[in-house]
Image 1 (cartoon, rainbow, N blue to C red):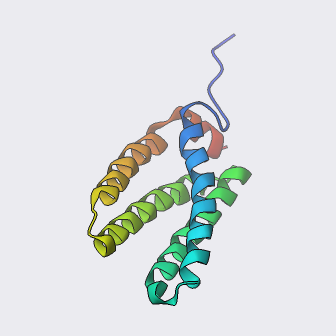
Image 2 (tube, rainbow, N blue to C red):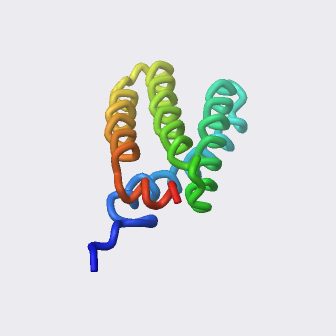
Length: 122
């Protein structure tokens, strides 16, 4: 018998999956906090947009839909752009840089991983 190909939510894919779940929670709480402070409505809109992308990416991932990979990549880059925007507002650009580095690493993983391809291209 041949070696079984990796498939499903496991291995290295657990890391972005857990971060995705955490981001859904964090963006929801951040959105609620932002709408309660009307002076930062721009942040509320940003959290709503990236939170919506997170929810959709999580939904597709749990359904193992073939478009999940695309939306996971959109989620990565939307989060990186949000970190850059928040860094601009707070004059602290370390989070933006970390977001870009993380997006590059995980984008590459999602493009090349056999587990991801086997899970979402069936």
